[in-house]
Length: 141
Image (tube, rainbow, N blue to C red; front, top):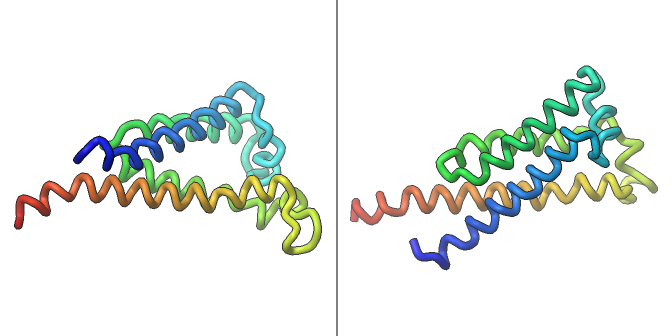
């Protein structure tokens, strides 16, 4: 693999890691702007535990994105986390909508941008899969 072909995978890894580390650390130090949203969305968990657990999970995902061999596991955990980020559309609607069905609040827009993260995670998985299977394909031809 050339340096040029590795660049997209590297950019995706560092981008996702930066966001996850940043957001996770903010939760762990009690400075997350998503604090109230998380508590409302995951209200069935104890308040302190859910913020700390989510912060730790996000930090671990951030670190995991930096370790290529962990990609298969990290991407699965990432997709599970991403599914959870859409919970406010179900049980936190007052945070998500400002005017009618099409009027997303700032929080709703913050959540809906995760569609781009999901695409980035899928692309990272595909780039990783192509990289790890490509030598095998060359050897078999």
